[in-house]
Length: 174
Image (cartoon, rainbow, N blue to C red):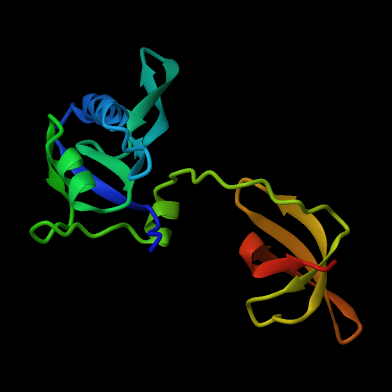
């Protein structure tokens, strides 16, 4: 049974987020657990600081005291994360069973998921496989790889109706 890696929130001592990330990455590498623990992130954001009428862009932690870990939850992976120096525990943990973030929570936190490149081009015909337009053919007008969305025109009642769809809501017509 192949399990999918999910994102979990790990609580750390304040100021130890980057140390936890480094220590966890070393532990993963030393124990050859890359297949179980697939990513460690300390979400950062750019903030403009004003001091003496000068503006400076600095990186600040989005969630001080927290580190995000992408992992397949097993006893071994749980043990490695839980016993990393600086980690105080998992967020939402009920005994030894932490709760993973939902896909929507992951998106809202701005964690960049790596996706394979999609072979789409402007003017190409696709079939809509989700939304109320399901089953309708459409023509791609615009592609946004960063947001993983396309703008299409759907031919309905003799008119071209614009729609914005996710990549997973369309399929190529061959």
